[in-house]
Amino acid sequence: MRVSRFNEMVVHEFGQAQGRILVRDTVLGELGHRTAEQALADGEDPKLVWFALCREQQVPESRQWGPDQEPRS
Figure 1 (tube, rainbow, N blue to C red):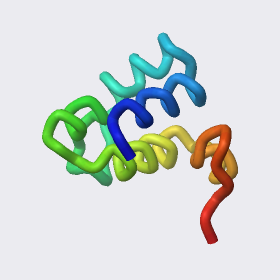
Figure 2 (figure 1 turned 90 degrees about the vertical axis):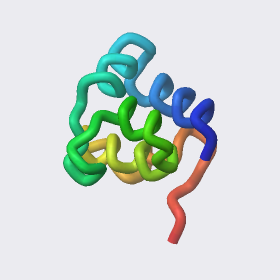
Figure 3 (figure 1 turned 60 degrees about the horizontal axis):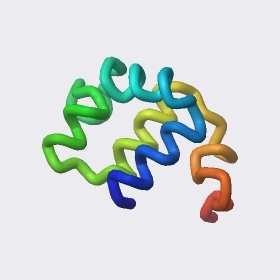
C-alpha cells in the first residue's frame, strides 16, 4: 500500500478532519507507541499502520479493506 492509498482509506473511514486528528494523535502500541504519522515518517509500511489504526479504533474487519476490497481469507 502506498501512503496516498493509506490517506484515502483514512478519509473514507473516518472523514477528513477526524482522520487527520487520529493519524496525528492516536498512539499505536503495536507500532512501538508511535502515532500513525510518526510510524509513516519512520518508514513503516502504510498497510501495517492502517491495520494497526483500524484495530485501535475497533473498525470492523469488513470495513478495514476499504470500499472496493473484500477481506482476504
